[in-house]
Image (tube, rainbow, N blue to C red; front, side, top):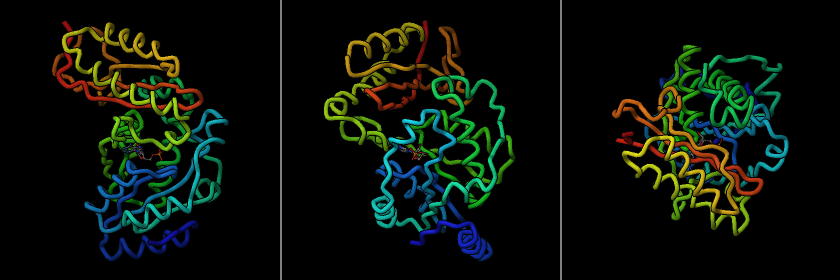
Length: 285
Ligand code: AMP
């Protein structure tokens, strides 16, 4: 595995590979890697000749300076995980490499970035779109891999790719979970023992909510809010039932065959956790 930090070495290696007809898959990450990230590497390896994983804690997508400061970082460990996963290139740039000049681009995602994560983390998706489009420009991947755990991010990246007409195929990968159902996340290591013990409730609540077939969306939302409130260690930021493509929240009357997802964000102390579940065949009556 190569470790590249600079544009020149990255570009000369990848340009030569591209000239030799080798396909390139990219999985952008912020490090603190876990099996969820490894699953993106595996998916990319099965579909490309070369797999690049970028590790860059992007300051532009943190609206909360404390969250940026606390974000777990461990490059040595991450490189070991990538080596074991069969990654070909770890791209670990400095901020100046990604942004030689300040990136002031704004993106019009309509209503998609105004709700859920966008509402609670103002500016987050502008930061994500800036860094991902810049990584696409540097790496020029054929395919790029993103987790369905961050389902709103995945939808926004698809939209950005379409809006900018970028020649890259966006691939969504299923959420990997701990044995108790908690979605794997770099932030899980920040949970204390009691918070960690209670965190699987998030997925349990989502599963019960998705099982409430025939119950109007408003009532399901209310049930989720009341259920999370009963747990003193968890605080609900939002729960929405949205269309999986345009992310617009559904109301009590909507076509029964829509593909819907329930998306949730919960705080356990200082740690923010998100998850989602497909509401296939969810119906209102
Ligand atoms: P992050 O390092 O948290 O920015 O995540 C990098 C990529 O890994 C994103 O595309 C995430 O959606 C994806 N990812 C994070 N957690 C998981 C998970 N539990 N399962 C699958 N993919 C994940």
